[in-house]
Image 1 (cartoon, one colour):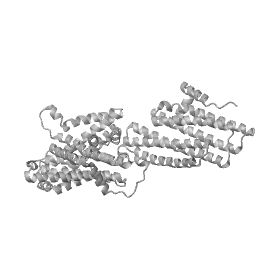
Image 2: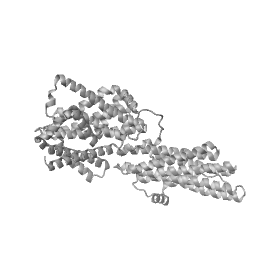
Image 3: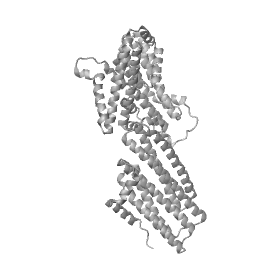
Image 4: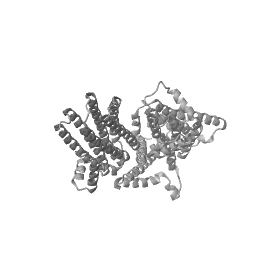
Length: 586
């Protein structure tokens, strides 16, 4: 085997790993976070958990990705540790799907239909169709499907290149001697563990083993312990992801490790004990891709059947390893786990959920400040400060996470949603700031013993009623993605602008008539200005949604067009709100 054969083998490995990567990425984009959401909403039924873990892993072609997601779920408090056990076991079964696909390369037949089942026969067709989708389709869904097809074709090309490159090794005695050395169970397990730990994919390491079958020098005696070691090596990815995580997340990674280690030890002890007395003849046979797929599947299925009833025992073992040393503080932002960034669809759903929480928190603070204007309460005033601080944290955490997420390969819909969220979290934070300003106005009035006239109280109440409606509608439109409701915001915002002008004019008249003081006038101006600013931010929320839905984001152009043109619906809604929030005649 010369240097060119080595380069061909390394190139084939690179194509194989890259093909697996982009195929998994395409599958993840097509799912749009749905698979992860299904995992998240899993019931506590362990059998369903195993089936679901196997199914999701078979689809995304990576047990490591599934397990890392589970570690993230547990770390975020989305999933209990006991629920994670079944999914982890199922992930080990699901990852064997790749080895079965790769085993089809060994099909030999003159029949056209059977020959077409061979991946090397149909992968060029997939590559051609996939490239056409990528180059000529305008629909993002088709482009994602094209990515999956091209990824599979690259994967199979890499597999074929590796197999062709290693064939000459059959005539190299040194290579044969190395393989014989790995037939020692302990050395074989170590080799499989190290190989999988390095490339962080049991599917890829099994694929490499299947490619080595082309040499004709790989026996089942050598392949068996290496496959056992590969199941242990795949735990490295989850263990790395658990570094710095909460205790339960570390325990989830340990459950994965203990499951594979205990399964491997028990399986090997039983297998070699029986072999000692019976002597399995097939161990001396030359291994093939299908045989490796069988061993890989049988081990994971048997290990799952054996250890599933003892799932709680694995949890206890993990808890004994990572002991409690006090209560861990709950953190609302743990859902923004960096582990989810590799699954942009699911990460976006987490951001959406947390942004809705941010919106509700900001609204709660604003409405508390409204209550303070009617009746002052120092406890409520302090609560407004606390809420504003929490909303600031929401903006910092969500903003940083969304910026990280924006660099990932996202679907068009998720990319639009991310842009909307980045705009909206700023508006929610500013609304919270205005709530503090209103609270401070109420505090000043309370400390100085100031009271508005009955006329001013009635006018502010009408203004406040309009504010309640615009805030309720804007926040509901955001949370439910209701564009029809969002379009009702701007007419009400125009009415609120008019109320602001009228209240200031009426205050000036009362000041001239000696019915009000300059000091109260300043406070009233603060209140009405903050009301108007909150309404502006509600308008921003609605416009962000509408403009992004229309594939544009020129807010000023949209508003100018809306007000400049004789829009019958806008005029109708404006007149309706104007009548509803008409100030009393003097």
